Image (cartoon, rainbow, N blue to C red; front, side):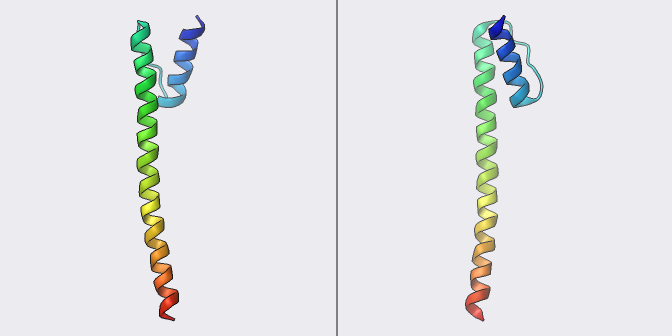
Length: 67
């Protein structure tokens, strides 16, 4: 009972909707894949943000050195 509730709450938190796995292995696999997808998305978003911030800093440093 507690494991089923934990599974549903975790998937709702990570993915926004509960999935319907019936056995324990499938439920654990769902949790691992959902957590992995959140980590991959956060890594890509962070890398993209860092890219644009580094370009902005480079442009700002060129502007101040030209003056």
